[in-house]
Image (cartoon, rainbow, N blue to C red):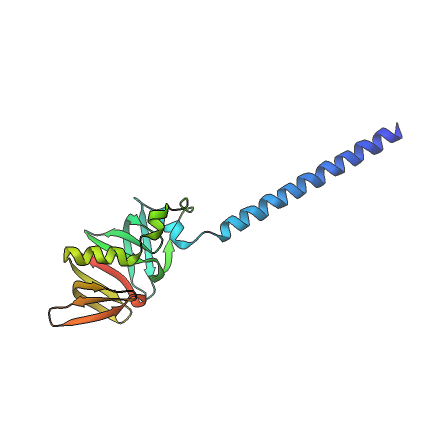
Length: 168
């Protein structure tokens, strides 16, 4: 009788240790997965939903996320469209979980691709930068800057300082 009780006790201890190890492994895996989530992933998950963003210059963009990729998102803000580089987002309110991994094509769709499309359309834009707003039409998109025809000449704007591109 004593042997059976001893074996039962040992089996319970072993089962508890297995459960504890499994629980710890699940926590480790969950933490590792969370560590891979980017702000862009969480912003992409807001497609079709409202978002409130604070940009690095302290200005705000509020509206519905129309489209999003790894480097940018397009927000409908009071009748206009606002293209926001993810790198210009300092804070975002009320984000949910992350979107699933984006398809390869979406991961390759850079901010410069969208800016080139605006240049082809000859769309009137306001480019908000850390150095102020610039109105005009995009005439050239290079690797690290965009050229804007302001009507009074052209200005080259460093992409690293672009906070938002607004279209009517």
